[in-house]
Length: 118
Image (cartoon, helix red, strand yellow):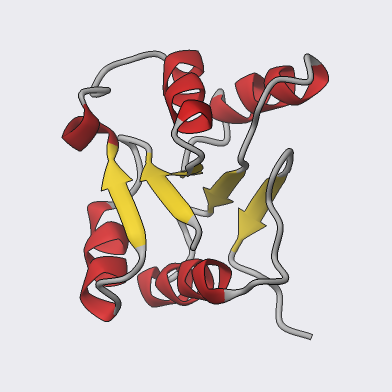
């Protein structure tokens, strides 16, 4: 199953909501793994080593470092950028959908939530 790392700027209500909905979704926060205050490249490196997709609201800096990893062809499980303006429940729904989807591949990609419904 997909594993996630919640960046320190991610709204903790999203993490709590994911954990409440499913005990099987593997999601940890940066402070739980000793990364609180670490720069984005360090967070991304740890996530890559642990095969975890990073969840963030940080569209300002995290995305650039993610694209650096892609450009340099380094291991990159993926980055999910969740809009700060998206409803909390919608973010939880989309994370849950990704976690349980065998068709959804994020390796080497940056994805934005919420998903658009068509």
